[in-house]
Length: 297
Image (cartoon, rainbow, N blue to C red; front, side, top):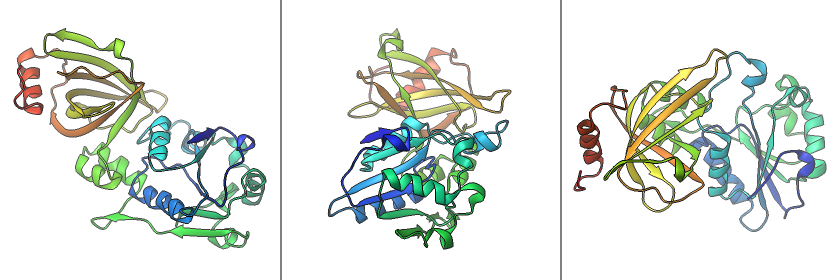
């Protein structure tokens, strides 16, 4: 998968080209339906392209109250690659971008990316003032499809709904809407892992600008390669004075994590509200034993 950071950097790619445009925060089941449509349109040859943004539009329009993200940009890109996308164009959502008319935006884009198909969600609007609605876009001459939203138990699947369920600690609904467990994708340096004793490892890490779960202790699975490593995570989230979020994770686990550049921390279940990572070793051991039945403590 190729990644470029401006329209002018777009390389020559095999046609026909199927394109989608959007923030794609979470890459949930509704998003996946659109991405799968790109694959269907190019299954006899061609390229699947996503144009997405490095920052949420709220950082421009509401800088003091930006919308926290479900997943990081790096996580989004990783999921795009797994879903078979060939090219991702990552643009900043800045004043220059927001000031373009939809005609100017698409005219410039098609100079570098002569796409045949555009696939977006039913509420997609383009250009300054969101004036590029379906009636206007369908007149521009290429094949455009507006796909309906997916739902779960009569609730529309959306990034906003997933954020609400995360804040309510409803990991089950989040999993159903994402099509996978909720997880945090991070760079990983094995040198930062501490061996506390003969059977227990500790790793402290953190992340900013993500939608927060309630602070608590959670059962998680650590993925780098191969089978997941069960762990317990002490999750502490805070909101900063500029309206952004930050979290600290203290993880305990019994198996050594294989060397890797990144790690995916998948949240399995809520355990309890005790947030002192230094609470009794026996308590941590019993929690780890419940996640690793049959292993010695």
